[in-house]
Image 1 (cartoon, rainbow, N blue to C red):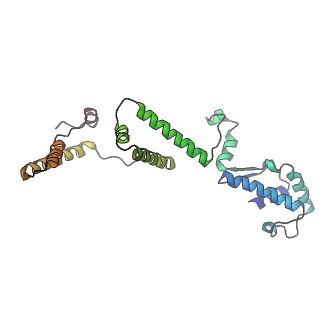
Image 2 (tube, rainbow, N blue to C red; image 1 turned 30 degrees about the vertical axis):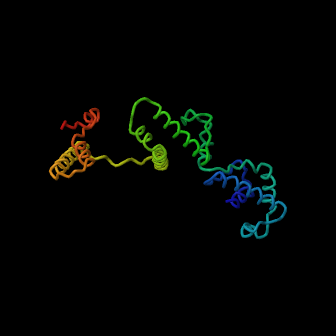
Length: 224
C-alpha cells in the first residue's frame, strides 16, 4: 500500500487527495511513516527493495519532480481506519448525521475502558434502589460471580448487538407441570415413610409453592 501511495504521488497526485484506509490506528501511523521513508529514499537515489520491480531504472525526471513537490506536504495524506475515515466525512455535518459535534473515534483500549465504566455505573444504579430483585439477590449470595456473569453477558451483547434470545416457552404449562410433579413427589415421600426431615421439608415446600401474584397475573396462571 505504501508503494501504491508513492506511485500516486509520483504521478502528480496531491497528497491531500490521497486516502489510505487500514484496519487499525497503529497500521495507519506505520503506513504514513513507511510512505515518508520511501519518498525520502527515492529522492536521494536509493530505490527500496520493495519498489525495485516497479522502478527498475529508478525515478524518471517527472516522477522526481512530483515527489519533490509532494514531499513538502506528505503529512496531508489521509491514513486512517474505516471508522476514522467515516468520522472525518461526517464531522462537518453533525446535525445531518445526528452526532455530537465533539465526537471522536476511540481506539479499542479506550472503548473497553468506557464499556467497563458504563457497566459499573449501571450496576450501581440497579443495586442502589430499595426494591429487591433477582440481580440484588444474586449479588447478595455471590457478588463476585454475579458481577463476572453480568459482564460476560453484556460483553457478548456488545459483540453481537443484533442477537436476540429464542422465544421462551409459555409459562403457564411449565408452572402447572411443576405443581403436578411437586405434589406427586410429596405424596410419594409421605407414602414411603422415609424419615428424612430435609427431604420431607423440601417436598412439602415444593407442593405449596406459588408464584408471586404480579407474575401469576401477568402470565394468567390460574390459582392452584
